[in-house]
Length: 233
Image (tube, rainbow, N blue to C red; front, side, top):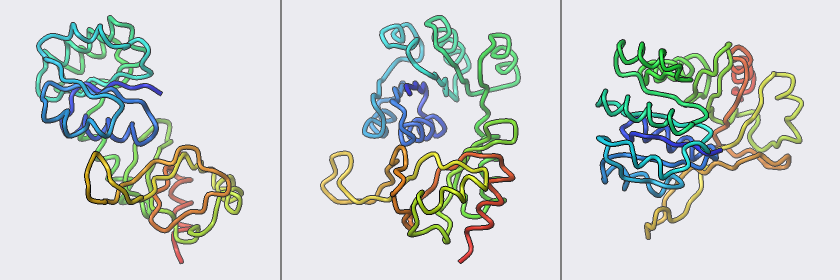
């Protein structure tokens, strides 16, 4: 999957990194060199671009992107200009950060696919973490379905999908991937450090480790029941 994130403030940066960790090929764009420096080792490509002029976007394969996110959070005119440009370039799906009620109305008139208010996203993620055991993040997919990140339930540590496939099926929960803590030298650093790596499709014989983070998909009620049932010793 190919994604483009335009605007690397707190929201845009974390979105780009999360997309990359979930296996997406991410093009990240920002006007500040320092923001690009912070993310360049985490994504497929990171580019500095003047937000006063979206014309250079034409040099990138925007029409080939599965999703383009305009995450500019401090400039109404730039956000609108880039939204118009990515639409003009034939982006398949567009998501935009909403800056104001007027901005939201204009985006709806443009028939933008997804409107995002980061505070609402954060609130939903916090709600998931408060109501479901072991949850460290997540987002609402609509129609009472969610994708969540949760610490591996204690009763599943040391087991694999061969051992637990029937459990996931009965619970109505699907394991999307695993984020595993690994040790190594990252981003050209000489010192070793710990970092989570997304494993991709989980092999049937992959043994779940205590520090693993599951990425799970399902109905919210099923996710909650699954975590309640298997998080105890």
